[in-house]
Image 1 (tube, rainbow, N blue to C red):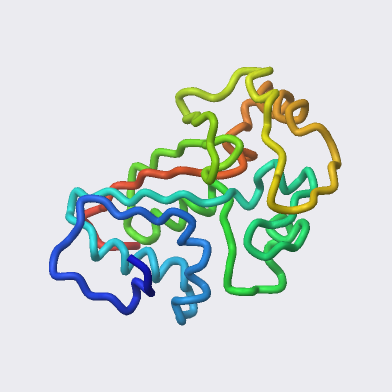
Image 2 (cartoon, rainbow, N blue to C red; image 1 turned 60 degrees about the vertical axis):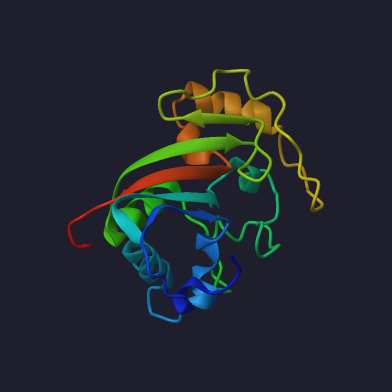
Length: 186
């Protein structure tokens, strides 16, 4: 289906709804003071009480951005790390921000997965129960869609991040499964 979900009414509720590369654009098609939250709340209404929301999105703190890659949606280097100060209606989230956003919208029990090198072309998928081991990410795939200034060897930095237990905060993207919560949103 192609279109603005804010303009579509469904007669039935769904078991699963997938937002694959969609949530980051809510600021462009949801005209409210809190477009990302309000978009998720409208999605929640489309789910069955035991339904699951699946979100795939880039991590605004992904290591690829620290390494000098341009932000996937705006093409501006370091924009996600600087908090999207130009506000083009597109933004991604770090793990804590995304968890809080989902919980505030009324979702619970979010399970995070970490597709590598990102959700668009994953070769490996890790979870909170199974982080990569040191040396396991030696083949971090370079960006083929944009020119990149190489600031450092990503796999070496990932090894240090993994040793310190912070892989989930610097993974390049997230794949998140969140349960619909029967109570009201916060």
